Image (cartoon, rainbow, N blue to C red; front, side, top):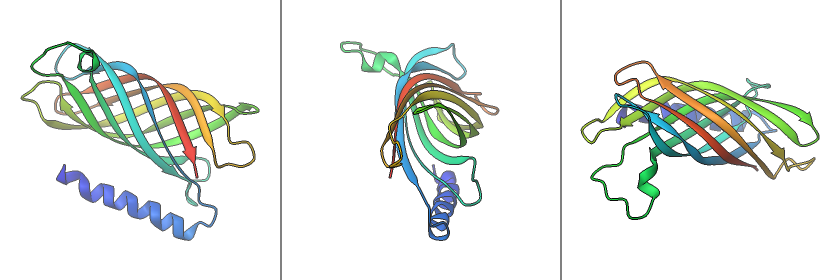
Length: 182
C-alpha cells in the first residue's frame, strides 16, 4: 500500500490545485453497490461489488470529469448468513477514470468511463499481489439536479476491470449507483 501513497497524494494535490484555479469548481461524491464476478488465478467467483468515489471538474478537462474510486468486491457467500468458510476471496483497489456524459432527454443521461486500475488480488488466502490494468464503465440514469446542479443523480451501470501483470486479476459489476454534486 505504501507504493500508492505518493500517486494518491499527487492526484489529491492536482484536485485541490484545480479547486484554487477554477472558480466554477463542482465536486461530486458517490458510489455503487451491485453484484458481479471476481477472478484471479482461479475460476470466476460470484461476488458483491461496491465502490466509493470523488470527482471534480478541471479547467484542463472541459468535456471529461476525472473520477478517483476505491473498489471492493468479495465472494457473495460472505454476506449470506450461516455460511461457514475459512476464507472468502476478495479484490480491492483504486481506479482513476475519465467520465464523459451525454444527455438524451430532460434528466436522462448516459455516462461512459475509461481509466487506469490498480487491484490488490486476495482471491486465495496466501495471495496478496498488486496488479495494474484498465477499467471500463457504462451507466445510464436520471439526473435529479435540474437547474440547481447541487443534488443527486441515480442510475444503473456496468463496470469491468482487467489487469495485465502478475495474477491477471479481473472483476465485473452490474450495479446501482448514486452521485451527489455539491
